[in-house]
Every structure is written in C-alpha cells, then in structure tokens.
Length: 506
Image (tube, rainbow, N blue to C red; front, side, top):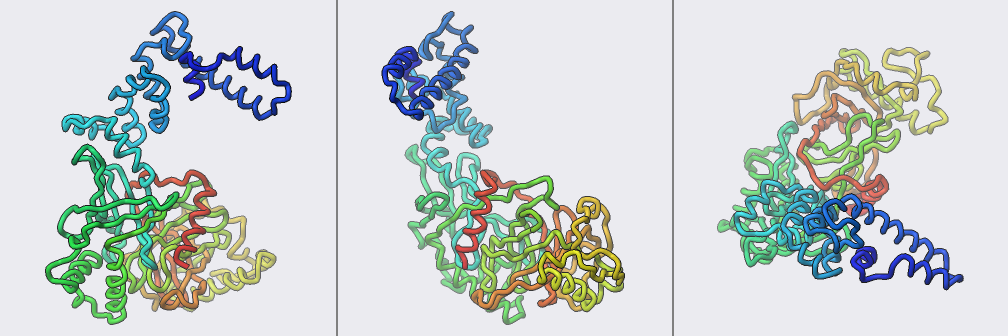
C-alpha cells in the first residue's frame, strides 16, 4: 500500500526517507530492515513499470502514468483479497477496478470458474458481484470437513459448483458393495439469484430448498442452521422418515435385515443422527500429503466393518508407520480414532495357499511378529521362524527388505477358513503383507485395545486387514472422487489435524 501511494506521488520519496533516516542515528535495526524491504518492493514494482514502459509514456514516474489497459493487466494478476485496499489508493484505481476483466480472471484463477461465467453474464450478473458477494466471503468454507455427529462423523466437501457454493455430504456405498462409487447428498447451497446478494438455503429433507444460515465459529470451524425445520418432516411421521432414511442409508427395508443386533445398530444411528438435522458444526480436515517413499498413494478409502456397514477411513504414512484414521465411525470405535496402525518395518511372508487356509498357521506367524514387536527394537535382529520354517532366515521385520522390489511380485492369496468377510469377492493375489494392529472396543468406546492383525496390500487401490481376535476381514477400496481445496498446507498442519480428530471423539 505504501509503495502504491508513493508511486502515485502521495508518499515520501526514497531520497527524503534516506535523509530522514540519516538524521536519526539511534534508529533501531528493525526500522532499517523495514526501509530495505520497502526499497525492495519499489524495485519490484519498478520492474513491472519497466516491462510495460513501451505502452505508456517514455519514462513513467508512477503507476498513474501507465495507460488503463496496462493497469488492468497488472491488477488482474493480484490476489482478489488485495484489490479492495488497492481501490482506496486513488480515484483512478477505484474506477479501473470496476473492469470486469479483472474480476473474471480472479474468479477463474482462484475458483476454477470458466464456462459458468458466460452463463452468469447472460443472466446479467457481474463477475465483480459474484466474487465480492459470494466467492470471497465464503472462500473459508471451501474444502473437506468432518461434521460433529457424535461417534458417526462424516465427510463434507464444500465446492464451487456452477453459480452455487454447495456442501455435499459423501456417503459410502450400500453395504457390502465396497467397489461402488460414493453417494452424494447436498446439505446446503449458497447462491445469488435473489436481490443480488448471497442466500443460504438448507437442502435437508424432501420438500426442496428452504431458509438456512451459516456461521463461522472460529478458524477451521463453521456451523449450519436450518430456519425451517418443518421442511424435514414427512406426513407419515417418524415411521415414514425412518423407512425413507433406511432405504437411502442402507438400500433395504428393515424386514430385509434379519440380524437382530444389526437392526438395533441401525435404529440407534437413526435416532442419534436425526437430532442433528437442524444444526451441525463442521471441523476442517485435510487430505494426507504424498511422499515418493510412501508404499502407495495415501488418501481416502471405503472399508467394510461388519454389522456397522461401510465406513470411510484416511490412509496416511508417517515414516515406518502407516495409519488409517476413521472419518466415519460407529458406537464401538468412533470417527476420528486410529482404526489401523501398520509397521512397515515388519513385513510378513505368507506360506503357500494350502497353509494360508489355516487360521492357526496365520495366527502363529502374526503373533510371532507381535511378540517380537512387544519386546522392543533391541530384539529386532534376533533369529525368528519364517513361513517356510527355516530358523536361519532373517526375521519377518528385517529392515533390508526392499519394498519396491517386493511389491512388484504378486503372490497368491486366500482367506483362512473361519475368517468372516462381508464381501466374498476379494483379490486373489497380493503384493505385500505387514504386521499391524487394529483398534477394537466395547459399545460406547469402552475398554479400547489394539489387537494384532495382518495388513494385505493387493494393489494401488485396494488393501485388506485380517483381525485375528475377531476372525474377520475388512476390504478397503480407494475413494476416487476429485476433492478440491483439500490439500494440507504443511505436514505439521496435517499432523496437528490428526491429533485434534482423536480428541474430538475421545
């Protein structure tokens, strides 16, 4: 701002400032640094002026000497958040900032809008109004969020969709079809159709859009409120609402579910989640960063969790550990908890297919590595028995295993007899297997404990986990939806988010 003012002739010259600085010999070093930074800013802006000097006067002394078309080009390259302050510099700047080209470029570069801008202009809406009244004020809610719905959690993606900002709730496929695409349901949208101002509407229920509100609670947190909850009710009362919810959530009727325990879990979830149909709080989450050393690309996966149905987890890598964190959860292990932790320094060599069918053989292998892990790293190099039964072979956790080379060789895989799987269709070859632990708990997250199991990497988009104590198998499939505004700014911010997620539901 100071640089712009001086270039317009409203501020002190550099020579004047130097004379003033020399007349104050006791000025601190911080002030000297500020002066140097201002001079550097002037050199940068002077470079901009120099690059466009051919289009204006021979030797422009300020931005005001440049032709309007060049100023439009310069202002178009600035972040939209800086333009309101730029308009305060002088009347000429304020007039130039009314140029549609500037705001059209900001909408395109910052929010990915292209074809939608042409539709908007046909309807008589300016790019400036769209940016100033809709996109910029609500930019802080774009991205991925986890709703605070007790143990159940969820996944919300807020995006610019056409001339709307829409909050999409992502729902897993119907159990047990883990390969099916995710389902989406709009929870709210924001538009500018009426009175040329942003309007928030709730999309919950079956009566169409109705009045809603969005409030920013604090940084990385916001809440939605419905102002017409009567739109959520159905003529048939709670019974009709439950039947409709059951068909949408599970793709079946209550009569189709014969397992009594599963019926109880479903009814419990309906009663609990319906309390949040008028007001919800969301906390920001990020996609995990990807490093070249990762075993596979981190990201979001759908996984089978027995009677609880399909749940969404986030796979991330932390040195020699892989972690799977729940984004959706259940009354036993809630959302936000670390459902799987894999030790990548402890690969497990599978036996031949005949021995793989034996749960006793698999338990012997995994529990052997588990005991080794419990003893600590000082016992890592001790001889241990492998799947082939050779005492002279290196231990299952030998660090000299080359992950990339091993992962390129597929080996046959079959589930042991007696291990339950929600989905009978699973890959019959795998790349690698690792020792890991899974989190189990009683109802209400009571008596949580980590129990040993086997992590099975099938390919870049599928993995599984055998829960030895439960004698069950979970299959995970990658979520392939494109999620914008979701990358963590730094690794530290992502790590802090994971720690906070566990505290939200503990």
